[in-house]
Amino acid sequence: MMKRKRLYFMILAFVFIFSLAACGKGQEVSLTPALTPTAEPTQAAILTPTSEPTQSPTLTPASGPTQTLTATPAPEPTQTPALTPTPEPTQAAALTPTPELTQAAALTPTSEPTQALTATPAPEPTQALTTTPAPEPTQALTATPAPTSEPTQLPTPTPALEQETKILVAYFSATGNTGNIAALLGDILTADLYEIQPEIPYTAADLDYHTDCRANREQNDPQARPAISGAVENLAQYDTIFIGYPIWHGQAPKIISTFLESGSFSGKTLIPFCTSGSSPIGSSARNLHALAPDAVWKDGRRIASNASRSTLEDWIRELELSQKEDTMKLTIGDTVLTASLADNSSTAALKELLAKAPVTIDMQDYASMEKVGPVGTPLPRNDEQLTTGPGDIILYQGSSLVIYYDKNSWSLTPIGKIDGITQAQLKELLGDGNVTVTFSLD
Image (cartoon, rainbow, N blue to C red):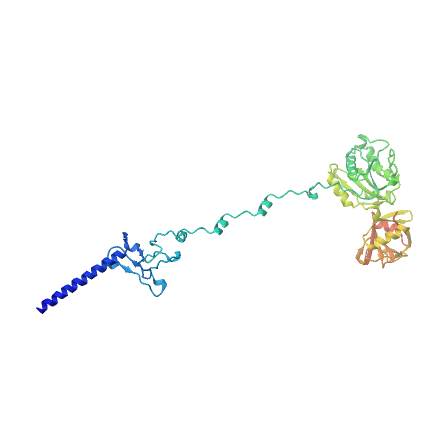
């Protein structure tokens, strides 16, 4: 009897316990919102908050009680698979209990903008600037430079001789070639033209070099002087004279000799030029010096009959024709020489002295290389190491002028150089003993 009672109570207790269990399960289901399981429970775990925020949310997987995982807060935040949702948007996130969260994660839908921004990050503005850089204004300026109007881009002007002297271009032209060059020179120099015309004009037969023609006979006769028709009007007004001629058998025609011997060229600058098909000026210019020994001769130039204006302009620049105030005259006996002056305070002082009156110096020979004599007035020194040559004029120790006819190396002050004279001509002019030289500006 007692055994039956005990069995009865045990059955009742079991039923009671089972009922309690059934009631607890029903209560748990009523507290949990209805969840729609996915086909693959391992790929989508849903975060379900409980009624009390302090309780840990329950992860309810799909079918099978053995798959139910309850997330409990771990001591370390990194081990907590479920986060308690809070009002802060950064704490509301659905976590998927899978090995790799990035491969399968069900996010609880929310309207908070922070999740949308996280899912689709906006491009950084620096990337857009890098992709489409704004053009620099300096590039546009470089691509289209503004035009300039610099004077150097204009045509080179004709060289003008800024001097007080007048220039004459005298020429003899049998066939017209030399006349064409002379006319071009006259235009460039703004010079007067004078054609040397023979009294008896040359005919074609006179110029037939393959026969015993008139031109050949004159060239072979050292004494031949063909007469000139007319003369230069007021030759004294010209300080620089260009003398042009054709080459006949390597020399200037004899009518040029007539021209040089018919006038006074003392102290004038003479510049010969010739025209020819191929022959150089050669000795033709040097052989004219003896016909006007008192003139200042500059080196001559052969010019092609078809020479351009620019060619003649270049030659004129090379001549460096001195202005009248940059020269000094030396009178030795009846011979007048012209010297180009150096640019220093010594020559400036000498010019001031000569502007008052010419200075005559009795010069003595020294060491078979120079003539030297006292100025009479001390001049400033500008000594420099020099190697002199024939025609150099030097100030020695600020008190003496020296004319060199040979080489010397010493510390000296340069004064100038005699133009258009050879060493032999200078030695002959100065002689062996003392010589009297008058220095002047006129």
